[in-house]
Length: 78
Image 1 (cartoon, rainbow, N blue to C red):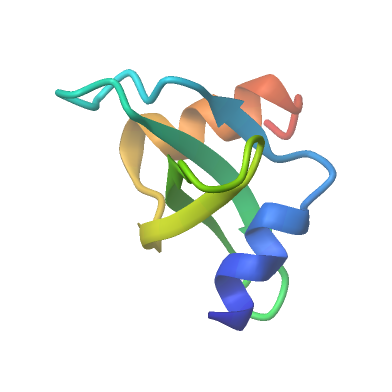
Image 2 (image 1 turned 30 degrees about the vertical axis):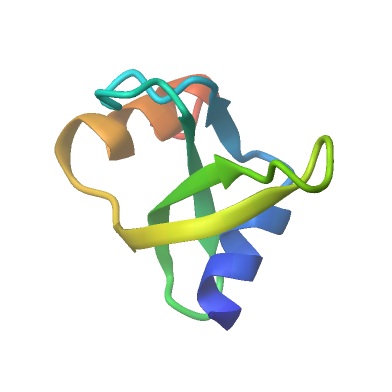
């Protein structure tokens, strides 16, 4: 949980809304860096119906492949 919050708070986080890999189109994909983990994480967020502009954290994992490359490319970290 703390690692996900670090990724969400990352000033260089990259948000894709809607998530390009979502079948329903109702989720967002955030790519952010977790300092305590030392890695870029993928965080899946779902819009809350009870609060506009608020999100539920639905899932998260260590970024690999395309997501890690996208984060670095968006932030010129290569």
